[in-house]
Image (tube, rainbow, N blue to C red; front, side, top):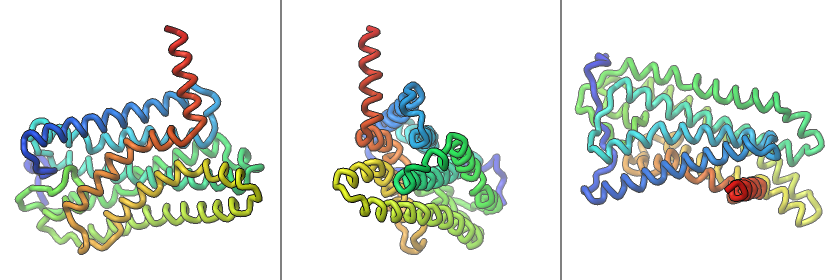
Length: 309
């Protein structure tokens, strides 16, 4: 076991020439700014307009708030690396980043599963929707998602502190991802790998199965709607959520559920970019561009601001 105040890791990140590195820095700074602005805009729009004070948008607010913290868990450190070439991160800082990354990611899986159940109830049991998905139920579902999200990976993270690291302390990633961190350990990592893989598989596959069951029931119900316009209207309420689900689960299953032997560090970094950076950037656009109610709220807010001027 190592002393926490004596060990510093080096994040390898991405190796670019000076000019390319500056360009990549500006790109990620732009993406980070877009994500923060987009997600905060959705939170503000839903908060300010009473028309959106319904369960679906309450879940969307929680997801937008989560995305702000999720992208913040990795991108600021990546920007520091690109701007200053200082690739060092302390061991406690590394483990803390790993914990928050996996915990926030876990909360996202829970929230997406909850949102799929919300869409199932709205489409399959519309007359009972408000009695089943009440404001109190919404609050409890979101609170449980956040609480269990932060509790789930405490034990795997604690196991990391029992590992020894003998050097070189170079992590082949742009943040402290679990697979990249344990690669530089000189301890037996079989127990950690088994525990972490079990927890990750349970979270990802468990929430995915719940989401899949919800959408299968939604599909069956929609196909039974006699009119084509009714089918299109029902499907339109799910398209945004289904798009986000595809992005999040696709990248997560690729990284954490497939066999370790078939993983490639460089490929994992690229897929991790999709999961940790692009998804929080795209989510506001997916939900705002494909949702007429959110679009209308933004138009109304824009008109009110113009009138005040």
